[in-house]
Image (cartoon, rainbow, N blue to C red; front, side, top):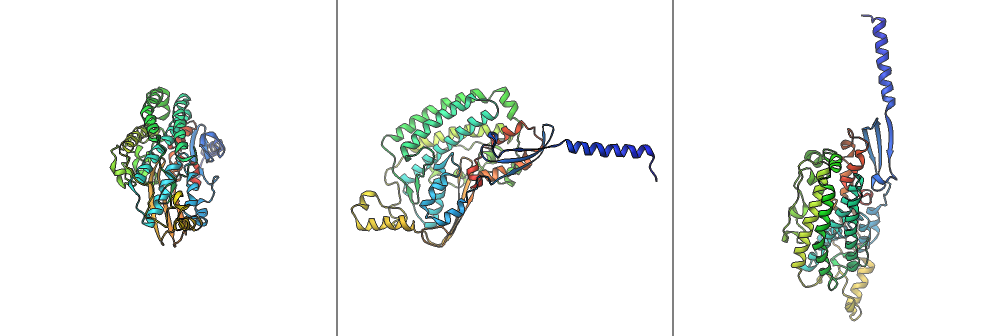
Length: 410
């Protein structure tokens, strides 16, 4: 049936309007050099006014080829590179990598070494969460909480420097142990720090947790369901905020975590506010773990003494015994001798599950190394999560995910 003139005109007007609406949408790049993105992350977004209709994360601006670099250096030489993954928690990265190699080599560590590793991992968790919470407050428009959290983090860095000789990139772990034993009086300083930390956390909560503006900006924003969190491989506080009870320290204990009593905080809504609350409570639980470690710190060696081809002998023996001198020379030049095989291990890092897949053909250099970076997986949900939110919500959503591009791009 033929159309009337009026029907044709109305149809043309409708198509022109639709075309006009499409042309009104704006493409916007956020990053890769923008303070909102917490590093060199680029978000290609499409906006309908202030409403985000599409968001595509673009990664790789910080890619350094860490996994390929590992194939050309000994196992211990790669430890400093793990510092540069999640550079807010280098001590925890060191431990996760070392445990992977030790499991393949069949090395059993003494209790004191495992206790030291648990201690530094929880200190790293506190350090990472303190910065994450402070910056998250800034992203939501609150400056003062950052001053509290950063002040406490500086105290932690002083403790790290006394233990490792470095504040930021610590490189403290070795395959088969740690670089050195705890200095005299250091545990007392750590205990003093964790005794005073709850006061600062309380101040942060007073400023944020019931703040009307903060609640309006975070509640119901960036909600991730438990199903989506699992489907996208999200781990750590972001996963637990969505109601999934998974913490590798409890479910697959390593380094003696099964000896310590602590709770795993679980969220209910999976929004930005829940992710903030989870990190607040995780700091409190880490304090409990640290106190238990200090109270039960065993004596003995801080390295596996029976792993002759894995851990270098003490300096005094190197200078007085030909056998130890040769042993040290071989470990330094050829690396810790790891048998052929393959293994995968992941640890509960502050950002989530940090995993290492290692393939060895024998000798002191890995044949292949693959890093499972939690920040990379956590960012993968942005394409689904962001559309439907306002442009101003981007800062809050990114801050709540608490990612680090160093481990994301590797």
